[in-house]
Amino acid sequence: MEANPIQKPLKRALRSCRRQHKSEHVTKKKKSLDGFALLPDDVLLEIFQKLPPDLLRYKVKFVCRRWFTIITNNILLDHASLILQRSTGSNTIRLMDIREEEQGLKMKQEFINMPCYGCIKSWCNEYLLITDSIRIGILYLFNLITKQGSFISPLPSVSCGGHYNGKCGLGISYDPFKKLYKVVHVYNGPPIQCEILVLESNIPSNEWIIWKKVNGTSHTGERQYYWENPVSVQGRYFHWDVHSDKYLVSMDTVKERFRQTFLPGSGSDVYRMDNRYSLVEMGGLLSLLHKVSFDRVNVWILKNFQRTKWEKFHSICILGYVCLRVFPGSVVSFPVTSVKSKRYIIFRKPGSNTGLYSYDLKKKTMKRLEIDIADNERCVVQSTTSSFWKT
Image (cartoon, rainbow, N blue to C red):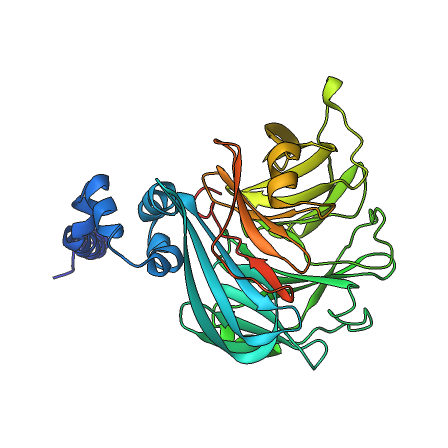
């Protein structure tokens, strides 16, 4: 007896339905086993608050979108991290965690031994980008969580003179779309040259990846003969102070494009910059501190990178308190970092009597932090991918 011609397509359809049903059943079973998804935000928050800060900052918050939002907005909002290292390089560093509490700022210090001797150039999320102190062009990537690292492909162009004479800048960034890191090398040509190394997820295998060249920028300001490491924002946007009174040089490392970022000022609040400004990241945004007079500093925030929208965030009177009580004489302090809540700005006083100070924007007071820092130590600031789940 011949089979009904409809039976074969019907059987195939039934088998397809069974496979689909089985797949949905397995998915539902997996979802039902995820007990954390059933917990309300306040219960999760209470659990997270009992975990070590490093575990929250570098691992737990990247588990899912919900966890990232809870941890970033409720726990790590008030933190700032920086590393202290000798300017000439070393294999021992001090990791400083600065946290905002009701009584003020609280510091936690941790000594870390790195497997290589070098100078930290950039810090994004858990990774440190390190240059070899002896061999020009040799780069090392160190993971602060695992305490492990590996060499990556050396710089293809060392005609810039290397990273010791101020003629090139290095930075590491994170692409939240492709979930990968990039190392950016910018140096004088002329014109400005740029090379990018895209790192694979398996970091130890990155020693043989080839660098690629991208178009540099023709906007160099007064930096025609030297360059420096960028100020990193959100682990994505790089900014260079090129000693111009009109613009900064910026780079979106995801799009791999340079551009001019024009400086703030409009209407009656236009002040000629004359290089009297400093750049620092504040709460995941670029901040510009502009000294408008001998006793006042305006704090500007770049609210929108794409549209170059600046907002005046605060105005600091530095004559009565900062200069006379904390920084007597002609020594000028410069900003290093800020806590994520944007209430405190961390300054460093240079010179033989160097130190770190916090300025409370709410109380308008300056206080020396209980951190011993030597004149030959430099500060390396962490840039975190705060918009990881939003972009």
